[in-house]
Image (cartoon, rainbow, N blue to C red; front, side, top):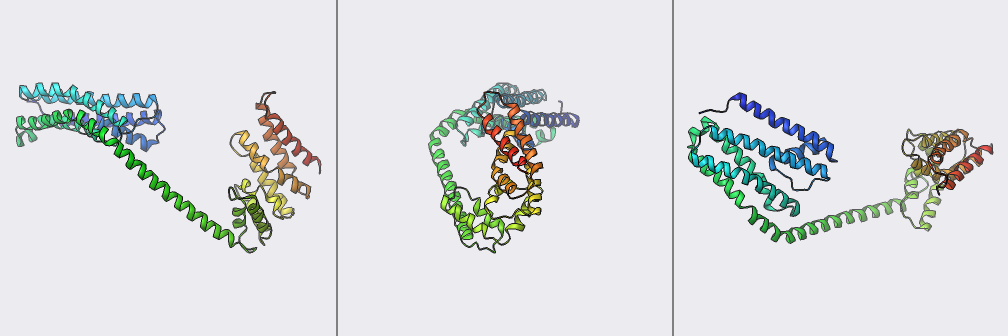
Length: 367
């Protein structure tokens, strides 16, 4: 009677590790998963012959099927080794019959998990591979055979395999009956989450309102800007926020510091021209540098053009006030010119970007 040697065990371990590795790489390539997610999906697919959520995309679905198929090929080889190790004739026949039935049952139950997620059908593909592997390893291991007679072990293990296979249809019916209750529980849970988030949002708005109501000329200019840039303020309240920011005692110094930042948040400063900021040499230099950074920012040219367009009122105001923004105006016009180059002559957006270049050029010519 043959037994599993350490060499065979190491070969089996190496094969399993390789399967997990190939699965991880495959899922990383065919799904939107990161490496950790791909590794998790590979392990789950390899051990459960399916997962409780349908993979996204045909490629991911086919790869899942392939990985599951390889599991059952490995189990088939292990079963053959177990039979050759020496088992009663009835056990060999039973194992040979149950193996393909188990594979079919696992795939059927796995498919049911896609249609009826969260049910008990997942137990079938979760239990069958370990049970089949356990029986094959038991009959091949002399130490285990000595503890429990092979006949008793085969009755227990193969009987459990048969019971799990037979449970496919009852579990599917049970899952179908329980699906409305699971959906209702899921919806209730989602409603609770939405209500909790809504309460948190309302609390945040109340705290923000209290903060804005307490703003004074001595408050940080950044807090005033936060109020100015609050989304969807009524027009009258927005004007109130502008008026408050114009009174901030630190607005001049703070504006220069914000413009001199490594990555100035220019969108939040698009109404700087309305905040009673003086066109001092320091401010003009900082604004010039910040606009150049905006013009040279990475990203799609159209997006960059839109952000530069938001700055046109600032360009007009501070250029008229005496700032020499020629370098920034040239950089902005060059970036927007790239948008025009990519457009067709009949493109409706040409007028918008041509107008921006003309406006920027007019400001430059004014010096």
